[in-house]
Image (cartoon, rainbow, N blue to C red; front, side, top):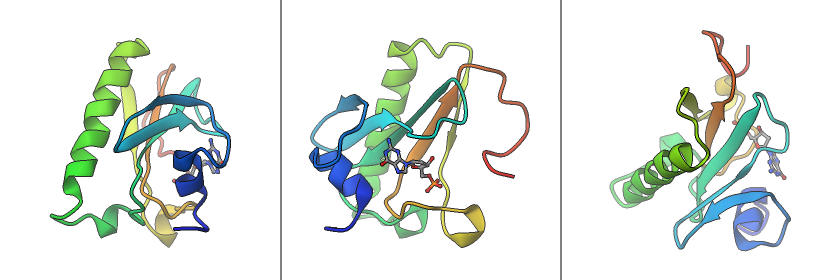
Length: 115
Ligand code: DGP
């Protein structure tokens, strides 16, 4: 999608602090961190959100979680981490390209990412 900010980050057209990228997935630090560790994992393919996951693209979600597990090990998140995806208006989704927030580096408590 030509006007999608995360498509542009994945393509390298907008700078980001990337942790990892491969043919299918990109991980980069969130511009507005909510925890000491806060990065986003996205499929390169433009999927608008969790509600748009289908049998045709769900392998990309599996790949995102493989990358999350790899980065959790590489970034030494042994104390634990939280994975969140916001979908739609009530969840305050602000970027309509599926992304998984990975939060860590402190006790995250029981509060939601936005309340
Ligand atoms: P959400 O509200 O779940 O759609 O989260 C979108 C996240 O994307 C939010 O935490 C801030 C982050 N974000 C928005 N624009 C940019 C950007 O240009 N660069 C980076 N690194 N993160 C961004």
